[in-house]
Amino acid sequence: MINDVLIKTAKLARLDISKNQEKILEELESILDYVQVVNKAEGDLDQNVNISGNYNVFKQDKVKASLSTKQILSNAPKSKNGYIEIEGIF
Image (cartoon, rainbow, N blue to C red; front, side, top):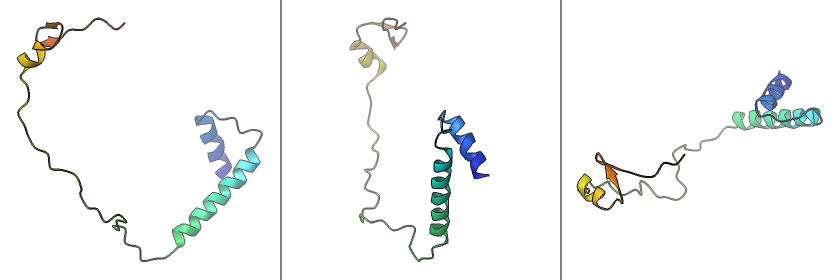
């Protein structure tokens, strides 16, 4: 089953693993075995532990008045129908 998943994943990623397929399969099985060991590990680690001690260091949003459309368009080189007009890109 792992072999099928490996081949399908390599195909989706457009990787040619035909030369190293056995070695990659062994390494993948080793990694999956290790993941199983880690999943079985017991501990009382709190999932909400924050190592840095910082909590919610973001600033509060402040609503401020913005420029009017007329003010914005006054700084544009060209405008048309309330929008800034630019040269075509394509």
